[in-house]
Amino acid sequence: MKFIDEATIQVNAGHGGDGCASFRREKFIPFGGPNGGDGGDGGDVYLQADKSLTTLVHFKYQKRYQAERGRAGEGSQCTGRSGDDLIVQVPMGTMVYEADTGEYLGDLVDDQQRLLVAKGGRHGLGNVHFKSSTNRAPRRKTPGQPGEQRQLRLELRLLADVGLLGLPNAGKSTLIRAVSKARPHVADYPFTTLTPNLGVVAVDQRDSFVMADVPGLIEGAAEGSGLGIQFLKHLKRTHVLLHLVDITSQDDDAIVQDIHLIENELKKFSEEIYQKPRWLVFNKVDQFIAAEAEAMIRKVVQALQWRVPYFMVSALSGAGTQELCKAVMGYLSEETASVE
Image (tube, rainbow, N blue to C red; front, side, top):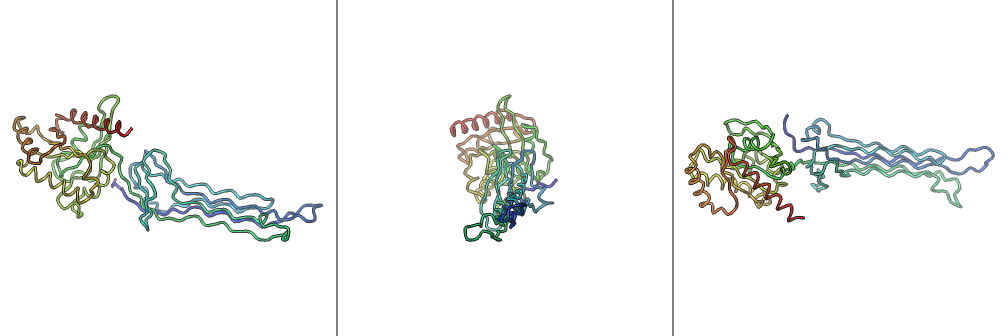
């Protein structure tokens, strides 16, 4: 199924019910007076996060949502029934904007969290409200007010602790397969990954984190080339980025250039993402003698003047992945403790 991470929908809250103009008609009561009841309020429209949903694909087929209108009031001061609220289910991680103005309305990140997006119209008043000493038989009533109508733009941003990025065929999908139960398609050609993938990485029986793999970046991605730029926004919620580097096909100078290429595309796209903690993960070290791989990677790190963690792994064989995951878990735990 095609991954859908943006959608536009229209939501219409229910109209309020009209007030009623009526008079008492009872035996032995010659001057009954007004007794028209109020209408009911229109139903509101809410968006609600649902952890069972993973895409916005259902909005491709239904784009208009209408809440129930309030019933009109009746005689004997009977109030009309209020319209039922409409609850529209969306995936966790959905951000909501006013489509016309771009106004940010809210972010649904917790399961069953609700966001009011369209308020129902208020009820109309019955003629009983307009009785006075000088007007004992008012025929005045008021109509219900219309409910709010809104055009909404929904944008899904995956909820992940760790994000993977790198050039196509760097081994991101293979790594997420190696450390989690996610099963993205892998092959020995670029652009195998066409949609983001999420995997839960269990470090031990108690600790785990969520890892996101997005399609690979290429030069010019910030200007729209390739696929990865469409999904980079999913990395905005992550706490740390793992930059996977394939060391098999090039010398150390070319590897340095490739790392700078990804850095430049990140900076062009979003300063926020560029400033996130980013660790280098040198992949496919099993293709070299250990001493050769270490020597090449040491040259790359020195050329970059890299001061933050870096790791050597083989996503295919699993070598070094356990140490990587433990280091990530330790970092996330420290970050959580510092916030608390």
